[in-house]
Length: 135
Image (cartoon, rainbow, N blue to C red; front, top):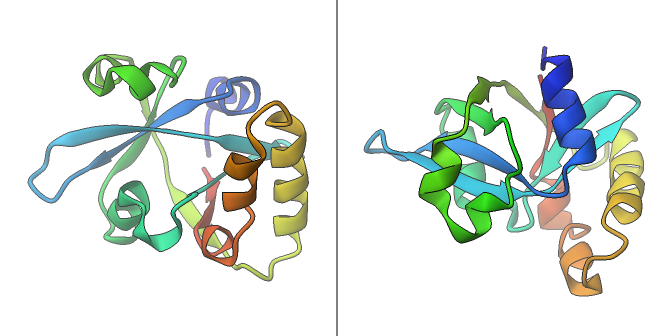
């Protein structure tokens, strides 16, 4: 189960940094969005199954979140890797699961100030297929 600190981070921080491992073992920090619905954190890949962090997760590689403002990963991925981390488990959520609507609604609320094109890509079938519960 994700710590209270991580759930709060995923709920209150606009951009979080997910840390995955490449095939060669190197860590990679990727800035992503996160949503919390009824106290349960979720993430979704804007690029669906083709997003590299999603491919790393599907390959069974270790995954963690950087405990800090993940926006740093947008400009300096190496700096994001210096932040403390919390290892997590990701569980896929079926595209037709009823919680998907609540996740999408929370994403629309949390990121209302984002460009519409950024929100729309997170609502595609491919993105829904790449939605995970964080624990």
